[in-house]
Amino acid sequence: MSQAKLAAGRRAADLVPDRSTLGLGTGSTVRFFLERLAERIRDEGLEVRGVPTSIDTETVARELGIPLVGLDEVDLLDFTVDGADEIDAEYRMIKGGGGALLREKVVASISRREVIVVGRDKVVERLGTTFDLPVEVVPFALPVVARQIARLGGEPRERQAAGGGEYRTDNGNAVLDVHFEGGIEDPEALELTLAATPGVVECGLFLGLADAVVIADDDGTVEVREKG
Ligand SMILES: O=C[C@H](O)[C@H](O)[C@H](O)COP(=O)(O)O
Image (cartoon, rainbow, N blue to C red; front, top):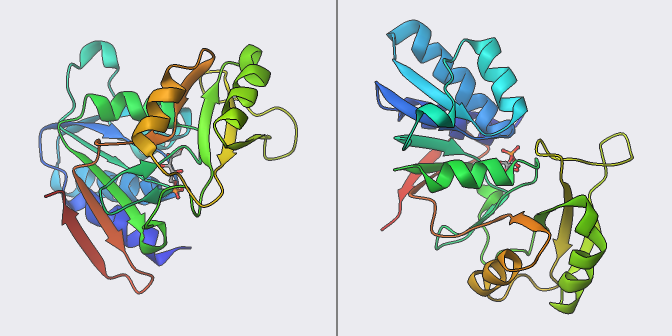
């Protein structure tokens, strides 16, 4: 078990304000957040309700007794906690290693405060150097989008299911994991280009969305950084 993920997830749960509506991110670090959140609900009577960003998170939250709510009942979220695959000094991120990028970005876009939980190994100087960029694509358009991405200088690889075979997101789409040799030079320009590509549903670049980051080390030390 990663001590860093455990420490970051638990600390973020301690930052959750009472009587708030939450975005519940996805991933192994968020799992520790959910467990600590459930403890606070049980032990302190914390009153919260959450919008899950994946079927996995929904399942875990239900098992833990965290009250859930749908986007039809919620306008804005007070506080979201989510993980990341990479984060740079400007709080720009790559997300979607678990395939939840679309719902995560929707939830981040309506969150007053987005708090990211990571181990220190996720902090990078340049996005794309340690993790390939996930791009969610309508299956019909896969070859077209793959060729377009290659023209942009990326090397796309279609994600496979864990046991082999077709991988599909919670939304029924495919994912291209795109390698950029030497990292991503201009994340803002790349996000705009991908958003304008027919067949692309969403990409894992999360720019200008994080407000704070909880960074933990393997010895359990935790640092909370606010965006200046
Ligand atoms: O699609 C998945 C998400 O973007 C996750 O938040 C991200 O992959 C980080 O996951 P983990 O905390 O398991 O490293």
